[in-house]
Image (cartoon, rainbow over all chains, first blue to last red; front, side):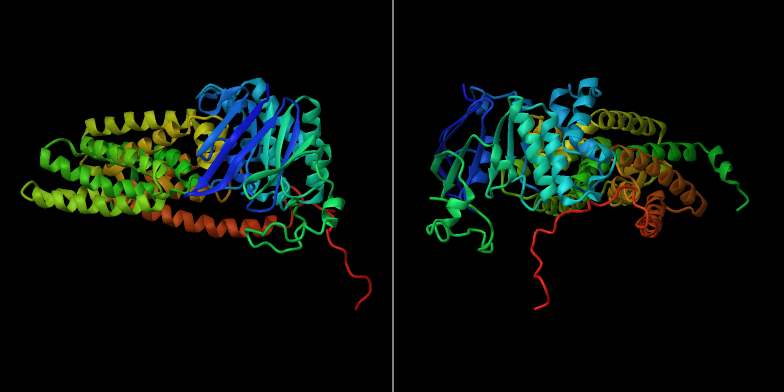
Length: 254
Length: 298
């Protein structure tokens, strides 16, 4: 039974279909990348999977249950597209990470030993054990991103969903992140990773699904950068919806 | 000025005023810390405007204004939450509607009830602690205790939905219920504390203690407790100052709060400058510069 099964998913914003009839399955313990150029619909599809945008058509099953009736959200670790972990009121890294344990606690009850252990373990996993009591807005962008990943790991997920975790993140963090995620994959956690660049993280993937214009154009072996970048069709195959510069190392294969 | 500071508390009305102000000072920041986190710092003001309609309904019906205010503000906060989550109305548009509608409703209804002591409206606008009776003090104390306990017990959950609502939703928290609880609690604080600081200034006690202490705190928990302590002290000092000068307590409470905020903001800037020399933790170093520097100088 796949941990995630998307059938014919269609999502539209104001009548414009952004995701059009996508099929996507992730088996237990499988690491899948969802790739595509900016505007290809990959982030929208992830948001639909997370239940943040409604489907216009098709169905999504999580751990065998229809999304509407799915309640075991604590089995899913979610890393949102980076907005920064900082916010109006100061919070320590440990406080942000412990948000990942709230679904395991009864409303209004203090944290148990397992909750505290999970928080310190996942902070250590991303290399921020020393920064647990630092305010997140004093951390660098890469460290803030690692805090958000630690928060997702703290839930002890069976499916880890990450939306562009490596955008604007330094090389040190990318490498640390790749290590952490491979460890989790080895431990049997399934991973669905949205990315538009190949890096240390993508080396460990089992499969890549490539979206273009809201449709699946490739579902199989992860792409290799050299071959694709050499492809003459690569350059202008997909317009940059967000108007990013042309030299960005995106991958938009065909 | 022959009276010593403590002599004021021989008078029962001063004891009542001080108790209610201290309770409000303690509880308002406990709710306010979540509102600041959610970037809804002005919601207290919006509900304060709505409360005006509630007070006017109290005048017309002859019911106690505190209870009609409570009913109206709670209803308004439910409508606002439904608007915010189920339509494309953004938070600040809903807030603007509350400001306009609340004032207009209050003026209209007090116009209708003009024979029933409109002069009283001023005591709700600017606060009139000194005329509160003991039963009113008890209502404030019980309401405050409920609010404070709820906020302290649910702190991690409320902090999570205020910091990152989308993440909270994906992690399976009851986001809608918690949002509603926070808004209703805010409505309770506004209605209960209108006697202390007045409807137009009620937002100040929700926000000022929080933004004052967060210049020094590092964690959400510390911010919450320190803000409650600061609110307690500011409200107490404000009541004493109002007794000495014989002015409405709302004004002295808020003026002291603003003065404390400005003073700490200046102090925090100085402290930050000093700390920059010896930071608690070092910035990441040795990060490779991901560009190739041109060799030689072309």
